[in-house]
Length: 539
Image (cartoon, rainbow, N blue to C red):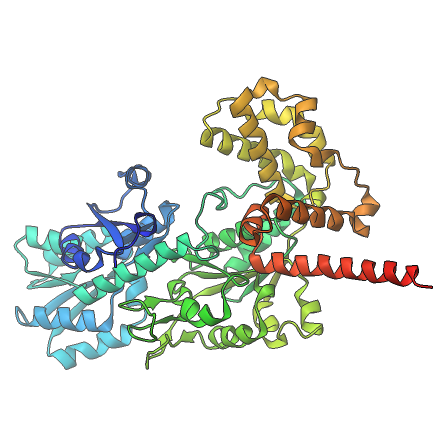
C-alpha cells in the first residue's frame, strides 16, 4: 500500500563515496515510505549545510561518525547517526584478513568507547595483527591515516568512507566498516525520527521549536540558566517545574546543549498524549511481526532514539499510573526490550522531565508514584512565571516580532511595534506566560501584514488584544482571577472550534490530556455551583 505524499518522510543522507554507495544499494527497500536524497560531502565549516536544508527541506538528516556529530551540532533538524555494531566490525575485519594479516582500523570515538573489550579480543579471535585508531573529526582521521602510512608498513585499512577513499587514493586496500544491515537500520531510524517529528508530542521539532538563543535578561532567569548549565554536566535526572508556557522546553534544550550528551539527539516525549495501548510500542519499539498491525521491519522506540542524547519527558505529571511503572523500570535499568524481541538493548541517555503540576502534591494524593518522583527529582529547577520576571519581556518580544515579520514577509523595526504595546505588556499578568506572549505577537504581526505597522495604535491594540485590558490586580493573581481567565479562554476556544478538543488543545498549546483534566475541573466546579443553587432554591 502506497503512503500519501504528505505522510512520506524526506530523508537527506550526507556521506562520502563508499557510504553513499552503500545507502544507495538499500534505498529501494524504503521507497514506499520515504523520499531519500543523497548528498556526497565531508562535513566541514566550508559547506553551508543550512542551504542544503532550505533546498531539500528534509524531515531528518542521516550521516555517520564525525559527519553526524558535526551536523547534529550545526543543524536545526534531527540528525540520525549510522550505527556501528560488533557484527559490522567483525565482518569488516574478516574481509580485511583475507587481504593481509596486519589491519589498521579507524573508528569514531563515541562509537568505539563501548566495545574496547571487543578490540582486545579480536586479534586472537580472527588471527590478525590489529592496530586501532580513534578519531573525533574527519581532519583527525585523515591526519592519523597519513601518519600511519608514513611510519608503518600499512597493508589494509578498515574504516569510514572518507578514510577508505584517502587510503585507496594511495593504492591501499580499504574495507568500509558499515554493513548493509546497519545501513538499513540507519534508514529505519531516520524514517522513525521523521514520523515522530510529524506526530504531536514526539520530537521537539516544529515551527514552534525553541529559538537557538536562550533569551533572558532578568537576574532570576540568569540564575535558572546558570543552574541549568551546572546540572547539564551531571548524569542525574533534572526535573523542571513551572506553569504552562514558562519555557521549560527552552531550558531542556539548554541542558542538552551543555551536557556530555550534546552530540546525541534530544527526543521529547509528550507523556500526556500517548494512548495506553500504544505506550510500549511508541516508547520501546517493536520488531518485525511483533503484533498483527506492526509495520514491516519493526520500528525503533522513542527511548532508544534518545540513546547517546537526552530523553525529554514533557508533561510527565499527566502520565497514567500504569505507564509510570513501565517508565520507572527503564529509568532504573537504562535498558529496554522491544516488543516481540528476546534481546535487551542497553542505553545511555540523560533524563530531563517537565511538569506544570506540583508533583509532590500528586505523590501525596496517590496520583504519581513516589519512587518515580524521586528517580526524576535528582536535580530540580523551578521556572518563574513571566509576570515575575518582566525584565525578560522586551527581549523575548523583539525576538518573536523579528521571527514573525520574516515569516509573514513584513519589513519593519521590531522596536517600532513593541513601542506601541510595551507599557501594556509590562503591566499585564501573563497567565499563559511566554507562549501567550508569542501568540499575542503573532496576532499583531499578522495584522501588520494586512494593514501595515502604521495602523497599529492604542485603539487597534484594544481590538486585536482585548485580553490586555482585563482588570487583574495582584490579589486577583494569588486569589484565582488568572485561573478564571484561563478557564474562560478554554471555554471560548471550545465554542470557537465547536468542541473539537484536538483543535482546542493545539490552539491553546496544551496536550489533550491537560485539556481533558481542566475541562473536568471546570465541569466539576459548575456542578458544585448548580448543586448550591438547587439547594438554596429548595425550602
